[in-house]
Image 1 (cartoon, rainbow, N blue to C red):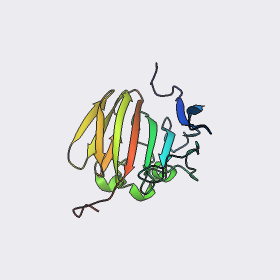
Image 2 (image 1 turned 30 degrees about the vertical axis):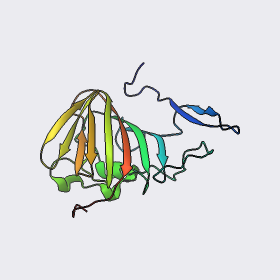
Image 3 (image 1 turned 90 degrees about the vertical axis):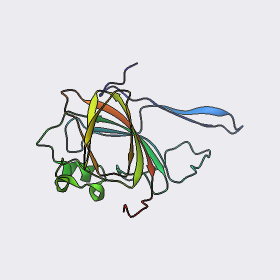
Length: 184
């Protein structure tokens, strides 16, 4: 089994037939793959999203449609995606990247004084490194996460920087959140 960046992603979606029996509804690559995002080697594989919590379990085996790539999960919903993140390039245009990934409103960028990739979403994000390594930057501190490590990112200002010479593949599960305690 290969989970290296650039290898195809297989998405299997289950469903129900007319007799309420469990079936495989689809088996193949995700229907939405984005790779022209303003940074060579950056790829978003959109696996699935839900529009509400609790999630609606019905006979519709189609992922809820979206007009474009959107960084954050839908309001009240969830999102799972896999990213291939190339080694950091100082010349990368993160303003363009965040525009292309539907996250312009979340992008903090150079104002962070840490890295141009800084952003913040109103969500709980579970990041699971599948291969390679990447550095998580916060306002204060940083840590390098490697294959098998899991990050629980809780609506914080953060950035991801691949300081290695190899791409990193990371899966993200995003859950819509609500700020409390004056954190908005």
